[in-house]
Length: 300
Image (cartoon, rainbow, N blue to C red; front, side, top):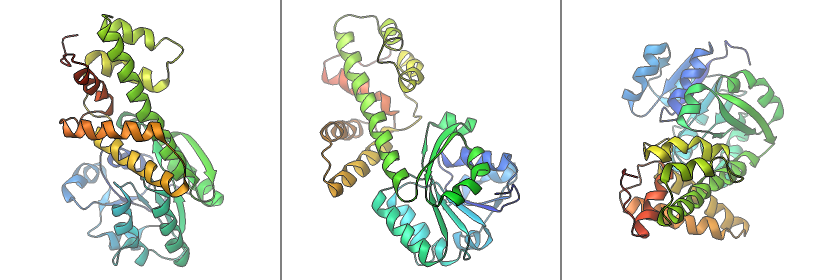
């Protein structure tokens, strides 16, 4: 894919906006559309053009990328009566980078094939900070040739790039990774609450865990979050709840038991019910502290 390939972009949320900014900075001609027009102001100021409608964007784009919220949004954007597939030219490339179910992705793949539109599923792993830095992990499935042709585009957004299969493999991998990320937050929360109840120093306990055999890039990334008890969302709890729903729904369809995932999913509901839904998902620890009779304030 040459840097003069016309890239259309739909979805300028917490992750989508910095990803699109990096595509623009890499020199690609970029046109965007977002249902909330005010969200296009920053990227328009940086040099992108703004389409009046998704259909206009679809007609203009040689490659169209979506980074949107869920199955419902993807269905509306791609398959709706005035969705982009109704207006994209034959031979164009559609790349969805959202976190959606394999079942919805299968529907999108079938519709794309009918329209002679190439389709890559390319979800990402990483935080808002990594999206801003252009160092996300991107794993794509779909036609290998189209993936290879898109490496310059993916390289503008990611530091680690993988092709993982020809069909829905990327969708299953994204759900598997997010399950492990969310369960890690639950594991860490229970361990910290146990240690806190036992009188351990908060900062020292976190430091030792991050240097122990259970340390991981995720735990190390969250050290300052936990020490400072600053749960400004890099990924909010309500979004983790949504991803766990996708994993559990997919598991039911495939007859796969996920008992740990199911239990942790209940605590995302508890976080939302106690006003923690907009907090970073590692605020799970404050819920465990509350359930254990500990003060979850900042004076540790």
